[in-house]
Amino acid sequence: MRTHARPWWQRALLTREMLTFLILVVAWVVAASVVRGFDGPLTITYLVLDVAPVLLIALPMTLIIATGEIDLSVASVVGLSSVTFGLLYQAGLGLGVAVLASVLLGAVCGAVNGALVAYAGLPSLAVTIGSLALYRGLAVGLLGTTAVTGFPETWTDGATANLGESPYPVITLGLLLLVAVFAVLLHATPFGRNVLDIGRSSEAARFSGVDVKRTLLILFVLSGAVSALAGVYYTLRYGSARGDNATGLELQVVAAVLLGGVSIFGGRGAIHGVVAGVLLIGVLGSALRLEGVTVNVINIVIGTALVVSVVAPRIAGGLRVRRRSVAAPDGGSAAPPHEPPRFAAGAHGDPGGGSAVGQRTQGDER
Image (cartoon, rainbow, N blue to C red):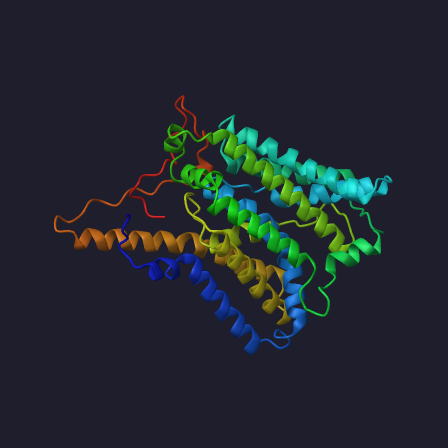
């Protein structure tokens, strides 16, 4: 039987995910005490409506970052799917067909990213920055500065309707379902274990039988399809299809995932932590808006949280290595050098001499 150095309750509670939950609770209590109107039922309604697209996109993004990659094109896919959905409805297609076509387009966008990253061996950072501009350009080019409006009220009202007399919108049910699906996928299936194995070392995962390239392709397709679904929701919630919808949303998504404890270097992550990270950003945004803070200042706060979520674990890991080195009788071994994240290196799983940069060492602190 496997033994652990720490008891089970310490392994369950003393984690980065639980720290994010604790910060979320503190932020909620402080906001409810200080910010006028924050503790009302409307706060819960608008909080869920606001975080819904962020949470949707953050779920597949969690798996991508857990492999050591990243997808920065998600917000542009939201805009492109929004425009596609609006134009197809304007052309006379049924809304169900328009939704399906938009999601399929998002999957194709994700497949393009995935093929370039997994099979061409290009860095996902460069690939998705390029597709970010490409997909946004297509969205704005298709619709220009105009917008498609006039969607049926049954659909637009349904996007914001509440469950009976409760403050929770109907979309809460869909979010809970998708959270459960992705939690099972990451934590209770061989596919999820493969994702984390790739994040620890794609080369070792490949030698153990994991199809690294196919796994990455599937993840990017998932990211594109779910982002497109978020674009449809975004359109129906605001009743407007525009090419600039959700501009800059990728910042909130990446910040929420990293705040939720997912390692930017891959190999570590949990869905419940990401949910807490999304809610934390939502609470901060809602409280600041109620206080009359501008969007630019809110973006500064979110950007700062993103930087802290990356730097703080790195500093903590360095301090742990230093403490162990001092405590070791022989002075300990030197700390491993800091390596760049894999998404900046590319050549994922390339057996023919792809870049070794980004391959993690066992002793590296996450």
